[in-house]
Length: 417
Image (tube, rainbow, N blue to C red; front, side, top):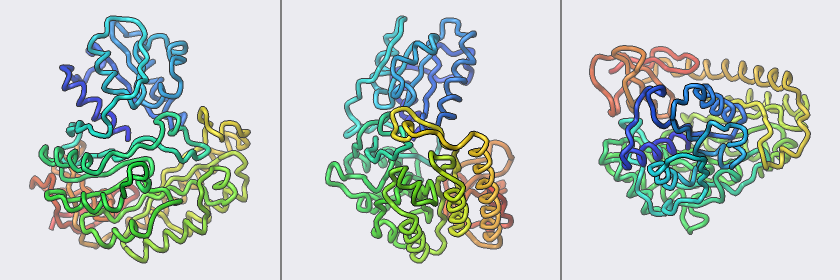
């Protein structure tokens, strides 16, 4: 979502006569787009901007995204060098005010009109791949999550607008589309739409080579959606399904609205429908009241399911959330220990999974050239695993057949057939 928002903001700036440069020292305006899902991300963004405050030299410093949406004008009290703040739903108004800026502190939280009909976001950062937001906001109120407070209620973009946006991107050369939302399963529930229907329609657009989506919530993922992994040939055989905890006690405290048993049934069902599917997930350790038994249940469940990869987070209280009212019962050291144990476990599982890909012939969509290694391209297998391909032939934006020669923790390595 942050990549998508940054591209959207960059596009609006270009359309309004601003130029992007690579050197912060030479910039007139510095804009930092923020996420506040974890305190670590929030701290990094503010620290990054703060590192330039002594070199301000008449620069305009802007903080945009979810952090300002949560803290509002309090930002100015703590960070007096920041000039303009804007929430993630106000980027058009932000650019309008930036054009006319002549000093002072400005806070912009009035929502833009147009999410339901806008056709912006021509792709800039990638040649062949684009995210397309189909919803904004969320009303699930998981007890640890700040997103409903930062991004507001669920709003779905009408199906025809999504299709027009994708067609605009295709005209610019995009061949791979990822539909994104806090929970794509809920797409259309406010406007009478349906995510499965939308996904089928996107799949049938000519010139699209690959499609994917992020993210599905286990509480309401449908069998119709799971069936699409075996029905739609362009759809990545990959499901990101956040688990968060392997303890029913903790899941209830998190307000996740599913049980471990239900989660396991989803995994079993989708693997039966599509045996080659890769499944990734999110895990949070150190949530309030998570004791050693709860942690062991999570660890054992990860060992049982064998995810292709995991994003592992240490719990940190977020403003306005229900969990922030609970005592932070797990020490920093214990969170670190639990994080490391799961991290080490997942490393072993991921290496084994990728080793099992060795010798297979895969159809790979090639996204781009590697910036680090000459004559090397980065692509994705049909189950969305990153693969490096050495070749002198230009294969960007194509689907090619690749033999996987080596599987390591984060990458597969293959040769072009």
